[in-house]
Structure formats: C-alpha cells, structure tokens
Length: 92
Image (cartoon, rainbow, N blue to C red; front, side):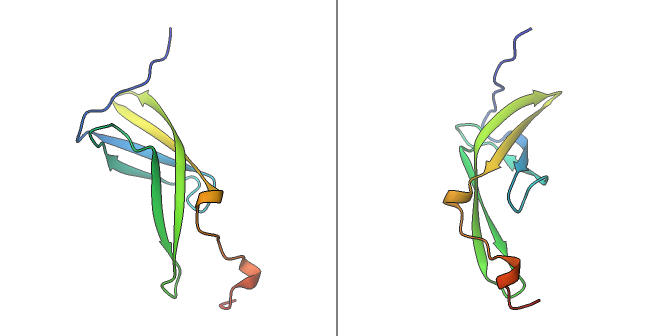
C-alpha cells in the first residue's frame, strides 16, 4: 500500500499540529486556501505586558487520517522573533 499526499479544496477544514517552540504539542483548525494548506504559519504570541512575538512554523507534512487532513508544522527558530530568556525577564 502506498501513501499519497492528501488534497484539500478551497474552504475545506484541516487540523494543524505544531512541533517545537512555544506552541509545541498544540493544535488548531484552519481553512484551506485555493492552494490547499499554507506553506507556513505565522503565530503572534503576546506576554502579560502586551509585547508581541511573531513565531514562524513551516515545513508542512500532511497526511490523511480518516476523513480529516492533518498537517504538521515545525517551528522555524531562525525566522521567528527571538524569545526572551526566563532569567532576563523583569516579572520574576
């Protein structure tokens, strides 16, 4: 049995899984664009003071699981904003 790459039509829902970085182990639902799933996802994380950090997840790997498409994205630390080290935070 050979595995084939799943396809999505415009407007189809798919499940996103995040690997590594601040969102490691979390998932999300997204809607497919005309091209299917996104090549990368940029997430905005805000701290308690309202400072925002852009996190980039890319290198999607898609697989069909039952009736759903699951797409896994891996954190791209180099293309993400730097994260503040815990020992450098002023709120400890």
